[in-house]
Image (tube, rainbow, N blue to C red; front, top):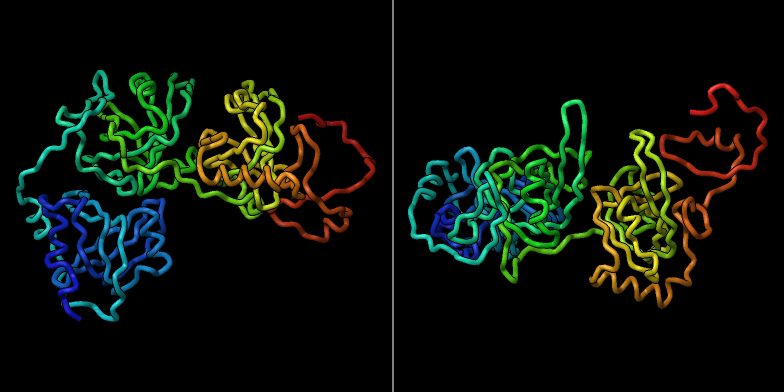
Length: 454
């Protein structure tokens, strides 16, 4: 097959500083694929990419390309046009991160006899000088004290996709939307006192969590706004603590004394809005306890605010139970906590509730809660919300609904569907670790008086 199908010197040109990453869209061949993981994490698919004369290893980044690799749309020897990419470096080595490709054809064999591109060849291309036109725009620099701001020349360059970040890099800038900004939380222990806040950041390649402590709270908290886009650089990167985040990224960012945050003032930022992958309420039975799901439903019942005392800390907490129903023919209880519970407007008539990263519990069948990892939206202005609202008002409110949760704390009736079983039947069933629910009518024949309260 003719080598003319591929872009001449297409691989080397990725590393030339004069190459415009926005307009350069070479045609290359995928000679091999090593599937290392699909989307969201630090593991990326490795692709052996050739222009017929040279080949090198590239990494796929983001859900778009990882999905077409996972379903074999992109496969060995496929000829593709690389629509979007980025170039990064680590430990003096340079890599191409592929964000999006267009499939052109599927030849049966490799084109040409390509040779491996050496590190010396790549470095030689990187070292080539070129005149770079600076891009100027109006930006707002959010930095005070020791936290350095952006240079006055304008918008930062060398934008990296979030999913390309790792702890071995130190010179990078991301362009990301703040999809969530937490409240300020405080702590006090034997080592002292402090405060922190966190941001959830998103670009077209993925998401990452960013945390600021004490000094960063004072300098950045009131300046960074949710739903806006920012250029962020010089944060520290470390392995993510999955206990505190539901974001699918193996790393997280920490604001330090060198961090720079610059607001993007472009009208069209090119950064997408919050991404949600909704789970049907009827499918919650198959979700693991303590896992996180995106959920959307109609609030058909809203309980009153309740006060309780946390057993571990003795703190006073407030909560509210809301029953959600969707088109799957099921309803589930959603628990709101703190400000979400207190500020929830119960005067709304059957509002649409959308939650990113609602926590799944097997308490009382299946139930959900809004945790500090979650993002709650009431009547979001999007197509899914409007369609769900229209369905409920036209026919949904008259449909029979299967209750996934018990009705504790709710204003309405209903309970989780359970079968009646005798104790013998329960014993013979040999139940496993997964909870099973049943009803039974029995007489109490003995009450142990010692240590009956705990």
